[in-house]
Image (cartoon, rainbow, N blue to C red):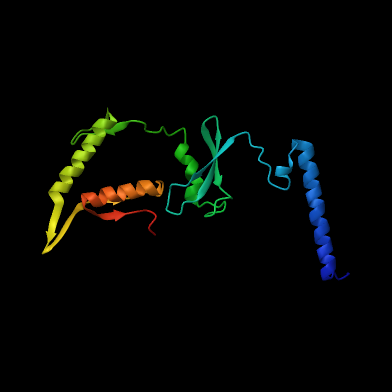
Length: 193
């Protein structure tokens, strides 16, 4: 058996890489008519459109590529160009497609069940927001603490707020201002690990 020196190894590696590129170039040009932009890259010959998005499950903010066909999500994969996850996804991110499962109908209307009622009824957004605002005001007024000893605190401990990693910085800023204006002290955000 002949020993291969360092120079021979480099020559063989270069020859192997050149022949692999040549085979790839000949194969892609003859079968799909790929341009120079796709030379040496993975062929994206999918018959679907792709949209990039951010995984909404945790505070990491991994990038995903959703394959969309006919207005329906048909596949989810990690975005290899995203700086955070570089194409990798956890099990929750891989299961993101289940969020768009056609077998599970998406709720598009506000449903309300009155106290002691057994049936849900559909109400308008205006009515729902009015009820939510009234309940927040009632809870805040009933639990508001103005003084703690000789210190003015102006807070409520009966309301809490948990932020979401799916909202933008501007929305998170406005939510925090609203909660602090109400006197909420249990203010948390999913991105605060």
